Length: 103
Image 1: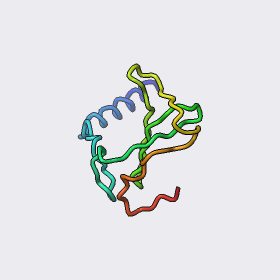
Image 2 (image 1 turned 90 degrees about the vertical axis):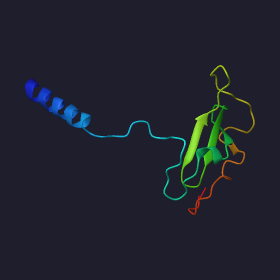
Image 3 (image 1 turned 30 degrees about the horizontal axis):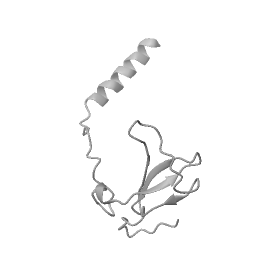
Image 4 (image 1 turned 180 degrees about the horizontal axis):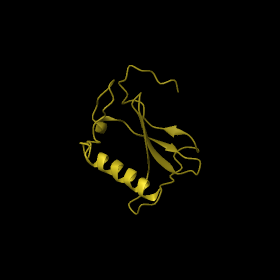
């Protein structure tokens, strides 16, 4: 039984190793079929999480992006710019999508 499992695992690993998969996609480009834009063109806002700390937020109409806002030492920034669970800033103004956002 152990030999059969080992053979199955080796066969699976060998078949995956033979696949020609791209390494290191370009994450700086939006690959959405509706609006392909450079991600540097997206406008960011701040969403305050329930703990009161800031998170960068962006919405291009189809996809959304969220990243914890950190200071230069890697600690979370809790600026008090808005009440908890509230988003502020122009985070939807970079959207050029023809698909509406119901929120």
